[in-house]
Length: 387
Image 1 (cartoon, rainbow, N blue to C red):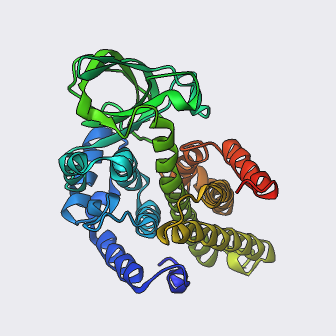
Image 2 (image 1 turned 60 degrees about the vertical axis):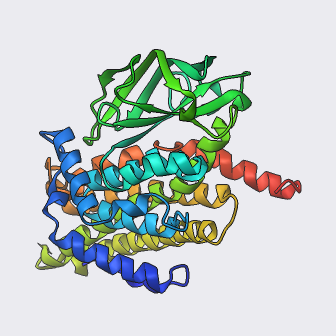
């Protein structure tokens, strides 16, 4: 059983503690969390989505009746799911991220039209931002959307799109004006829209549905625009500002599982006539793993707490949480593999699977190098009196 003492930290409220206990109990008995997508990726994703919807957990991926998107709840959900299943975490996360621009910037009519479907698992969501020449540099995206009558026509290519080929609905970012960040807008595009095409699926080291998408004379109605023309960059950054902390939470879940596996292995495995856990080198390794886990959790729940308290932006705090938690989870999992020895690299073993799962999180939603740039700019801006 994972250490849950962090739930007593002041960043969380009683409602979060109750939520975490309920989710933990559900996850203990839910068979769908054992699916990994190794043989039927799309089928497993749909089965997990169905289970999450039936359990009522997907409703936390979108705002509640008061319009509140609780980031601490998002983080607790991703941490708990990731500890058991990387694919389950992915399915939940994409419902949130794919719907995030609608949650944050949609009109009342747009929210009513699309968010209930996402919360019920009736429509799978995706977030289509990255392009072949515009990944980390979002402002350089080349996909265009031009006005035509009362609608818009999209042309361009998106790649490395999570849920690509599986999603029913995509939030797509396209250029509607000048070069740079100010000329980008956001649209909601259904998968069956004429002119939309899934070019290819992209196989990954840890099975997740990813694809390259193409838009060719893809026409959408005017009510598919989110916010105002030219607000797309702001919409994308604000969405990432919320969900970046949850990526860190998923990494934390992976790290906690790796620590549990390594600690149990150290206690049960005998080496030189005594439990491996009696060796000082092993104890030092476990101590460093525990330290990285707690430090990550503090950064994650600080960022989530600040956002939930009404901070307009938590760019610095979310970037710190994402950078530290994903990088250090990689280190924790690597150490777990080392402590397992030969068994640690056997295909399908828990720590081998974690080793493949964690690597992508250091790239998704802003690579570690990008987070360093963000943190540095925020720190310099504060020194210069710019925030």
